[in-house]
Length: 406
Image 1 (cartoon, helix red, strand yellow):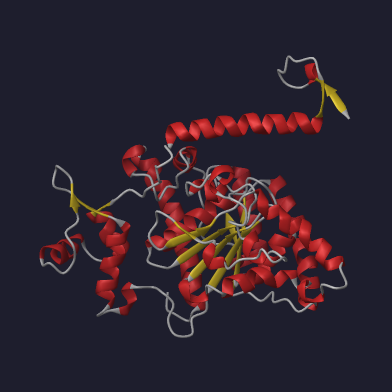
Image 2 (cartoon, rainbow, N blue to C red; image 1 turned 90 degrees about the vertical axis):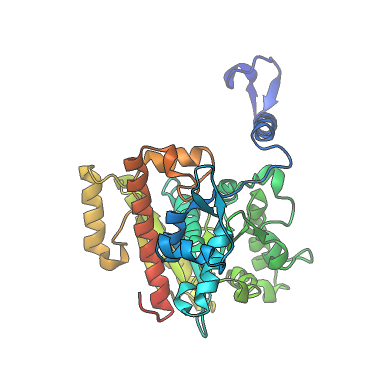
């Protein structure tokens, strides 16, 4: 099939081009422009860094008073923090964690890491409806838990790589072949250890497995393997992500899987690797109707997986209401309907729709990265309060699964 140039956008050439070559040319143009913009904003040697925290913020993260934090520095028990010209103390996240480790020598609760028989908590965030806030929820949850002192691994399973981009990783330029999770779950001899794929981030205590379009290869490879009678040992595709994560079990407390917006082999394998599931939902009727189909399809596919020996038992399964506008009557009715149908499977708290969250996203940041001074304070505080409430509720569920008091 060919399309005259006059019928596609603003192209002025008169040659007849195939849709394939047209799309490929547009992709090349866009990639080149993105690379140019990226080079201007982030020179080749530049790396994304996390802002320092004020003494008040650091004290709140650790769970001590500002005065006690000052005492630790003055007494020489902890390194002296950086000071501004105005004399304000600023702490890096590394210093916050170092203080936690110091205090945990006498009181273990300052470090929330796994203990004894606590299992690796793997949480899959999913929904096959785009715009449900899945990546926003995943990224903020991963950072919240890292700020709290947990050892966190974020795994981007979406070929569109939105979470990777939030962490300053450009999928087209920074992620090469075999540098996504596909490298650890592929079926051929090029498979490599997950530990070699994991990257450190600028968030101390938070690592990431980035994504790019390479992940689609798993969706193409798996049907071929399932149809090959000689590959019986590879047919348990749904166990491959769990097996990869098991190799780094001791290195982390919590893994966050940001699933693709589809019910393919990657999502199914992620759901089977998970100990817990979060379904993000924007409270609009079309989104709720879409979620109904998603749940029907998921149940049917997981039933097949369970009969094949897969594990679909979870510590918790929760619906997370995102982009919620409390003053919107129809949204309030939909949330009320969900609570009446699903009870406590709907989180008590919701992530509010906020210009603070969306504005931070424009600069590829989360609300935990940007300072309060960049926004109207009431807008920032309201958005941050809703994120902390949702993430704190999820943290409580994790502790409950580990048998700890919340």
